Image (tube, rainbow, N blue to C red):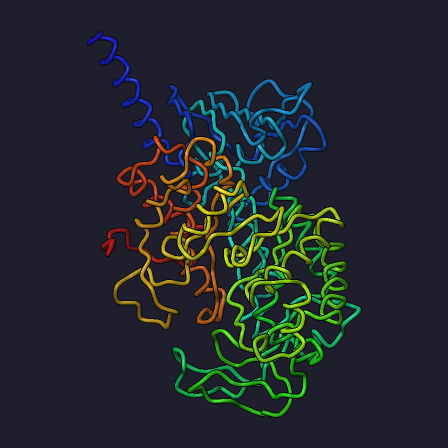
Length: 545
C-alpha cells in the first residue's frame, strides 16, 4: 500500500512538472514531454482534413504572417514536415466537444479535435509553444497533450457605452480572447451614456442616443466637464462583420440591451419611453453639465439614474421591435437584458405604474420589475432565444427560464442555482477588471483593488452548492466597464495579465491550478504580450489585500 501511494504521488508530481515546463496558459488537463523537437519553417505544410478546418488554418497563417513574416501552404497529404489539423467524426455528439489532442514529434505536428472548435483550441496551444522572438525557424518541443475545458462558458465583457471602441479594436479584442480559449464575447451595447447599435426602425437611437454633449473629467463627481460632443455606434453591417469575425474564432457574441434601468440614452431619443416624458433629464448630483439642460438628454456622468423605462405598451412595443432587429443580427442562443440597478422612484410616483401594480396583483415595485423582465423573457423565448440578466432579476421573482449573471458577489448565483437556474459567475470582487490591479495606480480607475493572484484564486463553483446544484454553474466571465477607460491602450492594460488568469480559472481542472507554476508561465506570457504589441501591467507580486 505504501509503495502504491508513493508511485501515485510520483505520477502526480511528474504531471505537475510537465504542465509547468510546458509553458501553456491555461494549463492543459494532461501534458507529457517527449524527446526531441519540431521546427516550423516556410517549407512546412499544413494538412487539413477538410474545408471545414479553414477558419483554423486561416488563423494559423494569419498569426505566422503577422508575427513571424511567413505563412504555410495547405496540401492534401504529406509524409513529413507538416502540421495536420483535423476533427474526429462521431456517431453521436462527443461528451466533451471542445476536447483536443496535440502531438508534436520530430516529423510532424498533429492536432485533432472532437469538434472544429476543439481543433481550434489545439491550435491555440500550439501557438503558445512557439518562440516569442521573431524568426523564420520556429523550434517547438515534442509533447503529447490531451485537453478540454472545465466550463463550457468562458466569457469576457466589454462596455462600449461609456466609451466607444471602433471595429478594429473589437477585432483585436476578439483575437486576444481566442488566444486564451475564451469562447464568449458579452457586448454591452446600451446604457445611460450612449446607445451603440443601429436600429433601423428607430433611427433617433443613433441620431440622438449615441451622442452626449460632454463628459465629466476626473473621478466622479469630477473636476469639470470636457464639453466635447462624444458619439459612436456600430452599423448593422459592422455588427454582422464582427459577429462573423468572432464565429471564425469560435466565439459567440452575446449582445446586451439594458432594461428597464440604465436607459437614459434611449429615453433621450424617444421621451415617450419615460413615465414622465415632459420632465427634463436630471444630471448626476455634484457634477458639471455641459450644453442643453432642457428636455431629455444622454447622461454625461457615471452612476445610476431615476429615469427608467415606463412599463407601458409603448415601451414593450418599442423593445420588441428593437429585439427583433437584435435577434436578426446575433445568432447567439442568449440575449442579455441587463436588469440591474433599476431605481424605483419614478415608478413609485407614477399613477400608471401604481395602477399597474394593483391590476397585475403585484406586491410592490420589485414585483413590477419582475413583471417587466418576465414579459421580455416570454417574448425572447417565443423567438427561440434564452435570456440572461444580472442578479437583480432575482428580485420580485425570477423569470422562468432565465440565466443569472451573478455580479454582486456569489450570493445571487448560489440562490439561482438552488432554484435550478443556470448561472454565470462574475462577482465584482474577483472579476471586475476595471478595478485597480496595484496599490498605487497612477491613472484614474473606478475604485476597488483586484490583483492578479486574487483573480487566479477564484473558483466559479461556490462551496455552498451540493453535487446536484453545481452543474447549474455554466462558467465565469470577466467584465471591463469603461467609465475611466477611454482608449484601447488602457483597455489592454486593465485586461492583462488578469484576463490570462481568468482563462485558466475557466479552463483548467482545479488540481492543475498552481499559483507558483502560473507565475513562471505568465513571465513568458509577458514576452508574448510584447510580441503581440499588447499593453499590460508587468508586476506579479502585488499583495492580496
